[in-house]
Amino acid sequence: MAGDPLELTVWFDGDCGLCARVAKWLDGQPKYVPVRCVPAQDAAGAGCPLGTQALLDKVTVTASDGAVYRGTNAWITVLWALRAYRRWSLRFAQPRWRPMAETLFGAIAGVAKMTKK
Image 1 (spheres, rainbow, N blue to C red):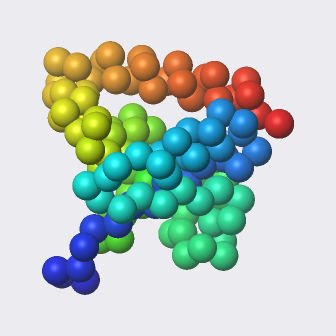
Image 2: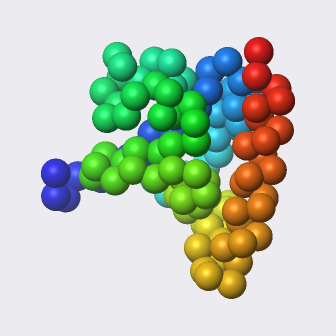
Image 3: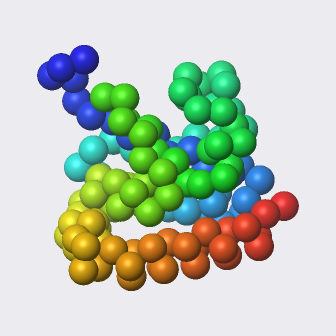
């Protein structure tokens, strides 16, 4: 609803050790915008508009205003919410820096797939 404060939900693979560690790290970070991390496997009972498999295919962030961010856009959105990393999010969102962001976040996603239980 208009005027309600924005909140973000990060859907992560609960069977991925790296993903769980990143979620725990996110929980402890100072934020401009509230961020909650929820295993994708719990999506059906947590009100997520996407199916579990779609969430497992790419990191996904949903916002309380209805926006959905996937892949690199999701990573940039999460950085934007964090006090210590907002400047990086604004940089990565620029066309000049976007290829670097896609490479970086693609590499993280690749490592995450290797750490899956």
